[in-house]
Length: 428
Image (cartoon, rainbow, N blue to C red; front, side, top):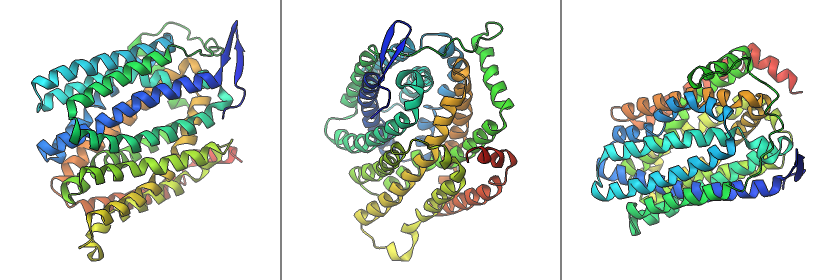
């Protein structure tokens, strides 16, 4: 599975394979609980609001706090023990969920409650996410990082399949309050498993800042690093643009169009939602077979344009041919398109993410990734608000077609960028 399973770091013998098993098992438990709850919560909010704008508001509050917290989280992660940060934030997340379970019992239809829930979890998981994403090379070894990222992507996608299906069933059978309980316990179990990680810290002293930076000013180093790396600036700008379009597609438009407009059932929606993840599993498996994934970055705009074409194809229910199609026919076609989208999305993202994990110096990695998170979350929030508002006033088919065409034209223009061409020449 992973190469070079053991390594000696100082007086410690690090078992990369055991680290990988501990991390992936902990994340599987925690992320599956969150996926179950997240889908059930989506159905719950859509049921009692029936509003795309209200739904997008709740979704956005899982992003906005994360964006602001990342300003200090990046510096915090760089300056403190990453393992402790991972363990403590997971356990705190579990405790917070259990507290909200009790409050939900008293006020089951409060949008404010769900917003506060999203805010608290966003804060704890902001620290957790940065600590994890910047520690993968230390947990599994740099040479194993590309393959590990591919496997993590596949497992995460499997969770995204199981989560909606189990969430839809659980929502109808045991109710949201007990799903709160499952989510809280899963976070705590994940934190316990992460206690046993042994991390390689050989690179932590490679780069030492000239003076100690404060938590807020520390993020400036991240911006400076990105500004000095033209290709990093280019890829970050590309990510911002894509997030404005594709985040609302996955989180808002697909569930709203199918559940509120096309009136598929909760189970059918769970199959549709899980199909993107099924494609990502296939893509992750294909990527795990390749030792050198960086060369796929050369074809990134082809991959993005293909995804834009699929976005346009989501308009098929508006064609006369499908006017009398059954709900299961609609479900199957949406699912097949989302499988293809998932494969392409993983082939686009894994090489880029691995590149930044390895190329960014470890002592700056938390701050640089914090900048990534801030800018990407800002664009995702803008996208959710923008599309949430547009969906209230425009036909969803027009929105998909125009968005797809804009992405295709943009890719044609961005492919001619000088920094990108220069970067491509170094990949061989």
